[in-house]
Amino acid sequence: MIRVNNSNARRLRAIRYAESNALFTSIADGVISVDENNIVTRMNSSSLKILDIANEDEAVGKKLDEVLSIIDDKSQSTDSTLKPINYVFETGKPIIKNSFKIKRKRGDDPILTIEGSISPMKQKNKVIGAIIVFRDVSEEEKIEQMKNDFISLASHQLRTPLSSISVYSHMIVDGFAGEISNDQKKYVKTIIKSANRMNGVISSLTDISKLDNNAVKFAPKKTNINQILEGVFHENRNSLEEKNITYKNLTDKNDPVTIVTDPILTTEIINNLASNAIKYTPNGGLVTAKATVHNNQAIIEVVDNGIGISKKNYDKIFEKFFRAPGVTKHETFGSGLGLYIVKGFLDIIGGSVTIDSKTGEGTVFIVTIPDMSVNDNDL
Image 1 (cartoon, helix red, strand yellow):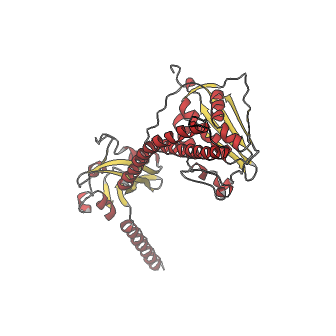
Image 2 (image 1 turned 30 degrees about the vertical axis):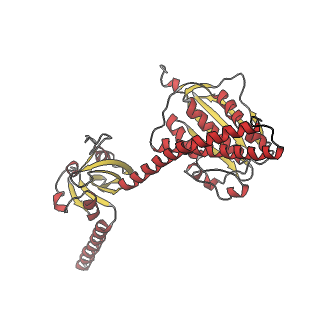
Image 3 (image 1 turned 90 degrees about the horizontal axis):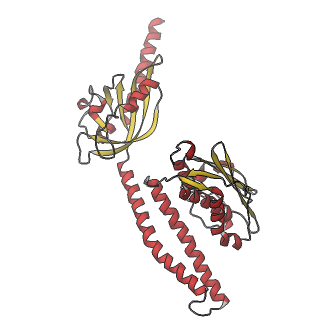
């Protein structure tokens, strides 16, 4: 009976080994196994191909930093190659989906961008090694850069003619080219409205390009939040009037709500929230805004009684190009970029945004912006 059990146990171990071996060798991502001393013990064929290593014997038995090296933005090797894996050994916690630039030892293009995870191998709660799973995202990175370059170029080339269209259309409406009929004035105002919409899209694309290229500058200084609220909604007065929407600023007039932050980014954040509120509020609706200071933070609320957002879409609305199902039924013009920009700019200034909404009743966006003067008295 014991022999049978031992035989079954050996058979079960053999099956498990065959399964893990098949998984290790067939997975499309690169996989590297290291022991507790950062010595490479195994590499699958995908990792050999990515790193341009002829066979496993060239790498097995070597230190991980002899097989690949993490580099900085200047393509110089750094001493941080082993830091991620040492973190896994010291804490026993995995690193999920990190992106690194690496320099392989050979190949036509020695500089690669990889995205990978590191998981600890444990035996009786002791870390005895780690598994590194990674993939080459260099081509994706190049395509993303080409896309951003195209957006930047297209935005620049489109903005100039649109400015001319807008300026000359305003001149026609104001009578600089002679008297025009009411019907003609109506048509020209439609041109102006469309040009303004396109300018808004171009501005959003420009902001997206800056965010994706980490090119957004953060320049904190003394900022009056209430003044920004008033300025933003004044700029949107035509949109408010077109839909007969009432706007109320509920901020205490005796409280200036002044903090140290970036006024340009804050203005863009509030402008996108205001535009969003007006866009999705029906004719004759109400939009309110309020700013307060609490615990060294500015709290900004933008509230509307519009179409609302389903709870299942709360996380999705901050994604690029996302528009909730059913939005198009309300004939709203939008690019799906505004809230993505709001979240991106808030991440830069250290702020946050929360949402409370009911479908068919309206939406409340609450933005929190920290007062940088608390952290740096020299600002």
